[in-house]
Length: 113
Image (tube, rainbow, N blue to C red; front, side):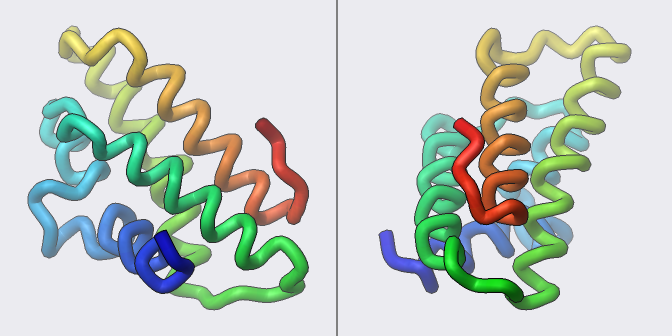
């Protein structure tokens, strides 16, 4: 996966969620689990973006917003689903923690995982 593909995937899973019914945030907010392979693709995209931006002191607002939403809103939707007694996949909690750690890594410029 190249940087542009990774960036596009992350933006589509984050800020473009309103236009994409299969976006991770959309699915979680609707109480639906991720599509098989979706988390793996997001984690791979996060690693590619990290490697591409590691030495960069700035990056674009759209990507930053998407990263923030993926890290924070996915966790919030997961917790709301737990309160509503949604039966989430067993590893989803850990996967969301991995997403948050990868996002933190991108912002810090040092891999956290």
